[in-house]
Length: 458
Ligand SMILES: Cc1ncc(COP(=O)(O)O)c(C=O)c1O
Figure 1 (spheres, rainbow, N blue to C red):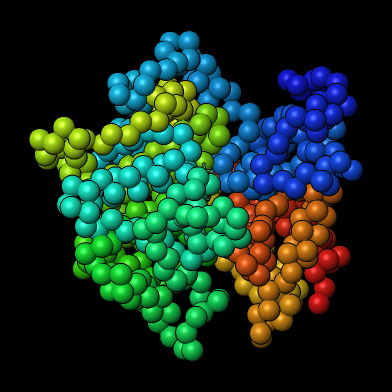
Figure 2: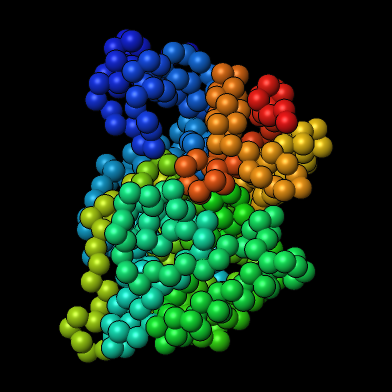
């Protein structure tokens, strides 16, 4: 296939090997094998520098390219915007920023204000700074922020401080003080002797932490609606209702991290909308513009925003800035991305294809003893692999690595929990673009089936 980067492939790969520090990558093996260089994308498929075609079952490896590759209308919207007005700091408004905020809020009843920045980590940090500043206005009360075991909220030191993934945090401490962990809600890994009412019990663990820390010290809790990189954890029944009650009871702001689930991944605009929750702060990034431009948003209620208007204090307004939060390409891309999701009825496709994918994965569960649990919401699905269904001993990371490498050989890119959780990096993750068809999913699952027949027999 001819590509925009139709340069000497060998030179390209050598220059990459020489100069690129790849994300999340151990580089020693790249002395022996070629680094992967992606040069072209269309729909669900990408091509590497050697011309090999891959089906991307994880939307750009990290669940981002929601509407698929090669969307000319998004590229055109970005181009036109950049020619008109590329950038001005976020202390001023700009046309796509205003229009997108309006459209976004129309999908989020109860929410009101949009603050732009340009990564999920940064959007979450804004959420934390909002909580800290409200606390400062109240003499330091309610400055603590709770986060949950197995959730991830980003890569900066403070976002990592609020992440419940031990292996992601390893070697990066000391961490920012004032972040306190609450237990996970993965029913398959139930922490109690009795699984009855698991969801309510798991949520009540949060109350215990609030009481232990002192409700007067706890300002907010940040939670993923469906835990993504921590093992595709769908919330158990009764969980969110109880979380919401607890937040109300102790006046704790509910911050929902929609960086992965936002903009359709689970079949609704936002993951939290499946559970009848009323958040105070919602953060989003990845699928917001499907990776066509860098953009993230921290969205709040008017009540939260009002706290920054109330006082005469010259230091009372939100004294935060994100240079590239003023880049107009992001909201221009996001506007067109949202239009595509609506016009192509992609939310319905996610619901239908998500159920189809789960069914296919249950088929693998019937076939292979190693599949302990299958879970997911919309087009974010996972399979937890275990060496023994009774003891639930996790399959080793090496088995998942072998399955993923085998799929890659077959031209299918899949995901997996990867050096995130101590001893629990045993979940295969799938999150294809929202445009996927049953035929695409058949091809993806067939490749996994082939790989499992070679690497997952126990
Ligand atoms: C739930 C969640 N929040 C936040 C982030 C951080 O986003 P970013 O990498 O854009 O900073 C991620 C990234 O994977 C994520 O999965």
